[in-house]
Image (cartoon, rainbow, N blue to C red; front, side, top):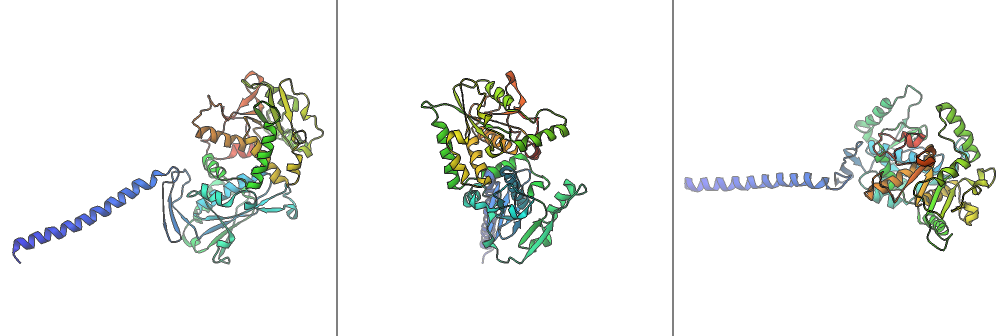
Length: 419
């Protein structure tokens, strides 16, 4: 072959090789640029049982293994304590790069007597498939039927006492998220209720999990029926104010002790104080329907309907004619229906030391943010705390601080609320 021909052949061969390298580099660059385009989910690709995930969350993870699971103790206490505990379990599974095995909730309020806990499966209250769809790429729920080797379990004991610090707990989680612990299909956390675990996650991460919780159709339809009754109180459309009225016997005992311990007088509110502050909400147009979300069985009497001034039409379950809707269900479901009714209200007024009130305000704040409204011009989802005096002797405006680095204020209450 002539030397010039050999030279041209060499250039041609090198050109093909260079083109292949160029194409490969271009594909890698495009992949890096395009994968982050999904909000919250910076990248996702799958290889067999390994799911690669990059996330811009403060507590983001590198990978999640869909064939590795986390099991947690039964979740107990009130509805919203259970929702917080569930979200914390989800975020723990996320940190461990695992799928959370669907936990058992508790239909009753009993928690000291184990045999009275009345366990109820998560998917009997919330939609399992919908949860995984809405939280896709963030956290994931699995079923026990997904396990290929149920005996391959590592039991992880959560630490207790003052010596078990936030830092030690975080180090334990990080240690169990890699290395030899990947050999176990299931990590089973034993010990205390997830609500009592150390908190390592920002409010925004919790809010993302809460957004994925959708009631099963049966209970969502019951909430629709209650809201329809409220809307039908008057022939003309009236705004409805939902008031989470904490004046029950057990609450008053608890909040008085809490006020003494924290040296404050901004936790307990009498019925008369609540009525006065609701009446003084700036811009509230009357007539207005007032739905009183209250644990009727724990009241001394039905006087919560008395004392409301002209222009206010107060209703509780009995007067509204919806007692039958609630009475056929256990406590957890009753609370879930009431939560939905309060969430949908034109105005919500609650107590900033109640997890029920706090989570409703968090969700309403999320809705407000998604609609592009700010705290100062929020018209669609206004919320107030009646236990803290605001303008014109009314309740203080209440918006969740979404930049908080943990859920402390929501879990245990605070008088320092955003407005």
